Length: 89
Image (cartoon, rainbow, N blue to C red):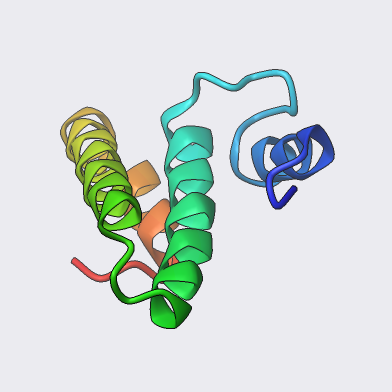
């Protein structure tokens, strides 16, 4: 399993304030980014997996919403997470 509870805790510890703070915008964006990268690798091998394509599109939309929220709330945190995760904007 690519996304075990240990991996999630590590993501939230690194990007959120703590491993138990799973609701922070930075933690959610980092988790979405990890899932998008994993599914993108899957799609490189399985080009006709349209269900996964839809899932990736939905995750990208959710991540975009979180990034928009963070940009409105605190531009410094937004810039930090975009730089840290190497996202395009």
